[in-house]
Image 1 (spheres, each protein chain N blue to C red):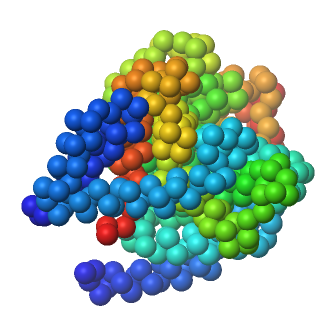
Image 2 (image 1 turned 180 degrees about the horizontal axis):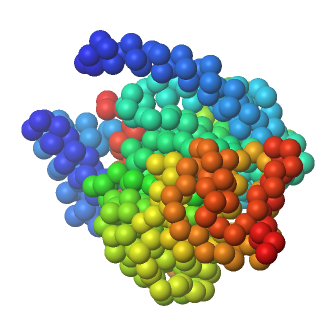
Length: 172
Length: 320
């Protein structure tokens, strides 16, 4: 638990950040996003995360924290839209015989995003190896040839992704 | 605690078995070893079920749309657009690629887009996301690049002093257009000049890596001026960071450099004639009172300082 005095100074800090730093952040977000609604959304989420950041209480000027959090959120937003665009394009490519219902589409989009987050930070080759193996059912040897790496490397790649998959799964 | 440990071990074993079974080279012996392991302990079976559930809730749901496909969706999932490109180009690369959700108009990249900046006459200290302390000189701009693996700032204009938080595995990097300055925890000053960068070690040693020249190490108090493919000989330069305390310390420095430093603390233009700018200056001048600093210079050097409104000040050699 934090001592009481820290909590109050925290509240002062938050009030100050809200009045002084929010307009500044919105301005910066707008220059990047060119869309006021998105800027407002990202600014809101940024402050929610900022409040939970343990560095905040001791920060001299929280702007560096704010901008780093906001950048990650912009990246996520952008990545989400990139996946959405690719998904809608693939729907168009498939033609009319493939017409998932809105609910199915929503589940697929959420799953795409979830798998993307699960693989976040892994190299493109590791991501590819995992999908070749677990989605397409290719053997490790086939994957090694396709990616131009050794079989033991393929094993490492898939193992990295499986560990994340395990960590994210709910314990039954 | 022992229980947690057992679960993690079980998870690793489950992953190991699954990896083997899906490798394309599993034997009957592998399959029965896996079955025996699962039956041996309820925690084993739970770990196995957890992995299977994780897989069916993730890739399992994508089978219908992505199995054996190599189209754009698959490529997008495998190869995310580079984060750095996206964020450093101020989102403009992303804007060009997505088009619809951002205007495709390219706005001038100036102060507005840098992550942190200071105005004329303003010095400011920031706490960085890793706990390091960053001080920006007046009229300075930086971009931040903090991820799980990297901690770095990019100096776009002006000067900074950084006191990196020590004891973290990642080194702290300051990038400039001419190269980078790297520290494990020692404080350093970096200034960007029109044609070069200047780095000064304020505590222990730091490393300087010009883009296309040999890296060099600076000892405490040493500084170096470097460009893309060259570096001067390191020399004592501690005074170069005295702006942090609000002072300009000069030792036989050309007046041109002194005027540039004072100019960052003055709203109007400060112009020095070419002849005057070569004069050598030594002394201590207050940055937060540039009028006083200019008067002091006028008293010690053969120069005239002419103030035309507060927006223009000219320095020239005093006529004989």
